[in-house]
Image (cartoon, rainbow, N blue to C red; front, side, top):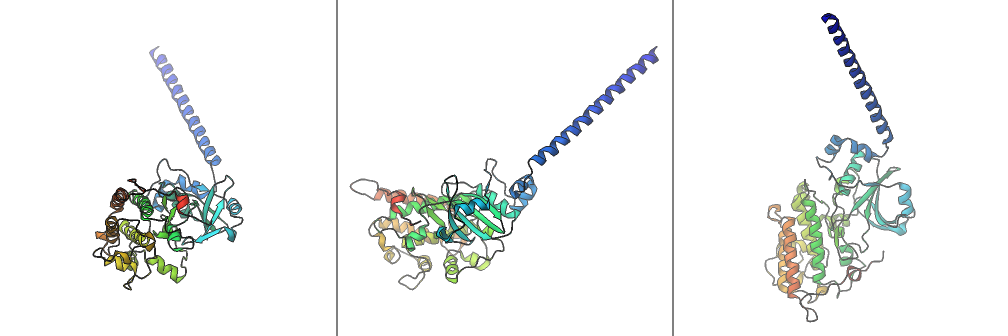
Length: 388
């Protein structure tokens, strides 16, 4: 009797085990089928989607950088919609040329105005990864990279359009503003805004070195907000030939720190040097390549600066008496520190932001207009004019 009961119990246990095995096997097959189905449904020929699935490959391509968890996906534009936005890349919409390529103004179908940079280039997964990373960087004082296009052996970058153009064009170009409007108290906020944009790049983890900072890459919007353009664009150039006219190359080289010109060593402090040259152009109203009265370039002049006895040789004559000598001296002293030939003696960008903020507040407190204790600021739309 006990043997019969044991046999029955053993058989029942075996049956239960067999049923369990069958259930597990069916569950595994069903899950595997659903996984394959989901993969098939989400398949895409867009390289950015493929890259997003391979985290290890993405990290290796971006040098170990990771995208913010809440970063938006870079928009993939089609060649058709960008051609429509620019009237087939008509010369009438060509607004500039840069290291990446020609720059066009475009109007998207949703009404957004954009700036489109275009160059020849075969489709590249590395290009998409870098664009996704750069488009994730958002700051009030940085020009936003919205997306990209890779079709017909063309590579394009799509940026937000900044209506009032570059500071360089207003200081040196045909669209110079009237001398009574671009006063020192207007130039200081431009300097501070650009410093904040650059400092934001340097405080990222790991820091992003701009590598191409210059006056032409500081834009001003309709609300008098300075925005730094082309952050990280050198990382997208690859082996593409970006040589331009020799005069343009010489003008750009003046912004490069000595260690970059000699050894190709970019760093946060080389960005600080470039920013110092920008400050010099901002205060002088001239291109830094131009000579001062002492037959030195403006950069050489400010590097040899010792006191304020000959400030008038460097200060933009259009500033008139719209500044206080004390604050101007401190501004030039900061400029001298930024363009120090030794990278170790240059201040960090966060310190530059602090100093410019202090200098701006001091200028405001010392400036009295129409009997009031604070200066009157002109809106950007009134301060700058543009023919675009």
